[in-house]
Image 1 (cartoon, one colour):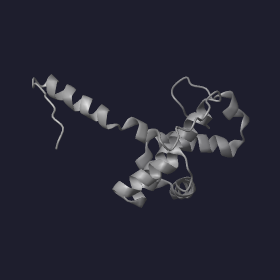
Image 2 (tube, rainbow, N blue to C red):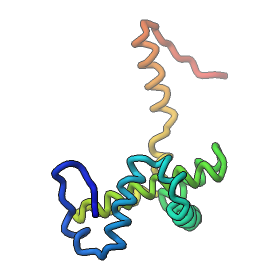
Image 3 (cartoon, one colour):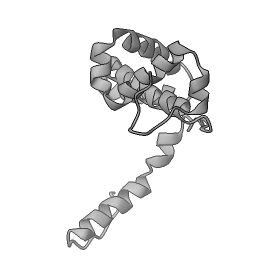
Length: 140
């Protein structure tokens, strides 16, 4: 049976599923809360997530781009685990709340967040908070 927070009941969508899916919901809830032990204690979950991430890595989506960014910096295995956790969080939220819709953030999500002007503003603000006066001159 499902073991959620005290007094919590299963969402109607989840109660309509069969016993296997109920067990999956329990497994996903525990895995999101304790990801490290879920991967160590459940090789089946790790394998399924690894295969799902391998498929997602070849797509032109937010998760595919996330995998490629992490694989460049940290290596393929750590990227698989990290994107697998992101996938688990998405699955858990979709199962926990039937009204939730998945909206892909898109491939360019990180590019829109990392602009040079934004970084300059942030650094100036941090230096001013430390009591410095900042004057910028472009490099020749």
